[in-house]
Image: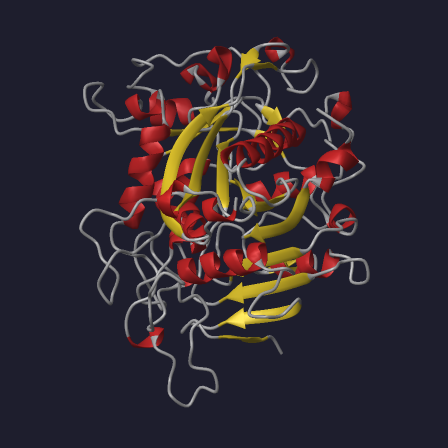
Length: 482
């Protein structure tokens, strides 16, 4: 058997799956017309391939990556390099998170949750342009789910000058809808990893690491809440599914310290569909004081071509919205559809019950999930402090300077990317193991390196530390926070 074993990753393999059709449980979606409808979840996998097509000495670690409010999983975590753009030192940028993890021997699964990407959106849900907002609607957070998007974005194409009544007058989903999706993907990832590496002599895979980005952090936090009954719609006992999670990472996570633990049933928004255009996609790179699409102080944080690439891949995942928008039906601008939702279940009470090794990463220039004061503390610090100090086996906070909400794809250019010689530590954290040397490639390299270290070690660590608070400076050097 040993002659058939190798741990050398020779290539990576991409594949999309659709989880078997399942029925939406009655009462889980706010709108009862979706009860018992058939649905599918898209899962994008990037896995390591081993030399001579052999099996590794044991199944590789598996990680499930949960996307945020607008960008679906295959885009957020498997971004292709923009055509013709190379790294400052030459060579490919290697922006894909999933590819980086696969080369490090990690099997990765990035779903598009219900209502996103190529997963089910429902004819009378997000497939109906008449379910975008009207001026008479009510909304919970106008900046996230704005009013009169029919008039401002759809009136010419596809509405042909006539606004429509909604076919659904509810928000699209509760957080627990997506928690149930995550449960399914966790079980799927474990099964697939074991099947793919069944010849490995080591024990089968029984756990996954879980990563939540932006709004995905709220979904992950709620999923790990042992007291969450899912309204009786869970696939298996809550404790059993939580046992299948080994380690957790929250990246630029939404966190409302004093928010509700259970669904407040406010009845808002009164429409299921929210749209964003290219400018709405680009805004996630914005730093404080910057004009949209421009850089202010952090040179090179917008890697040329990445904003276009994110939008291009988002439109690839769109089945209808890419044909909407603009003043000429023959030349649509393309719009990205996203569900409206109610936010709950990821607060100080829930975080205080978490019992998994937890890494919190936050861009200090994030203006989407602002890093300013929130109930007396910045969001990232409030989350870190809410994690139980005694019961947690590991908890680490990493604050990244010159990183926005687009930390996953953000770069560095110019003199700031090389640590000054008088710096005690001159090696940036995040030189990928596949060959990049200084200068620092930017926050995207730090994020990948932190994930790999947290997921693959015998014990989860950041820069060799099992606990503590750290700052990654504008040159990429990590130091303990004062």
